[in-house]
Length: 272
Image (cartoon, rainbow, N blue to C red; front, side):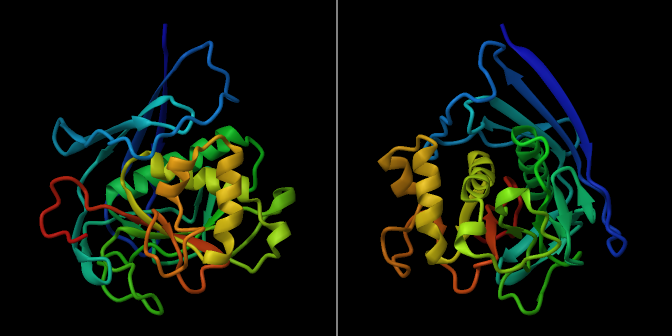
């Protein structure tokens, strides 16, 4: 027998964004006999269900979480990603608040597609459930309300890119992106956040410096990921120029990682 747990979260607008908030409702089905500490069972090569239209403009995205639990994220799809991440725009973007469950947002460039914002909020809430007293992660740039050029970034133009900070060991609170010695990075928490995002089936790439990948790789391996999954997920131990794996090298990116999402289903004019 399964028990349904319904969580309701509403995305608030930042002061400079006039776009409507994304309404996010997360419904999860859990088996009572399955403890929260169950081993990770993500299979990243498995195709995820595509969103299905619900009512007028509502979408539902269902997938398996890293704990093997079925999750469904419901959101109102009003935003439109136009063009490519490095040459595009955003129409009617959903915007992230300055802070919320599991995060603090430090950039004025706070808008993206409804799908991306909903998945990110869901993943951050899951991190809070996994680590109830964890310090919030720092969220950096998304896109401007209308998209377009966002200096100094080459991308972040069409509402499908977001920068997320690293977790620090000792549950240290970080007010912004900052350099951390390797031994002060909590790679287990950082990879688990990546895993939650990837499990949605909507992440096309995660960009992080190649120097950090061996530690993320080891964190994933220690959680039970097998060689096939690790090869799918990581560019490492291949070279930084191999352009293989979902998690790839990007120059810099020692203080945060960059997540890129796919074009929302049915979003005409969007370019991967």
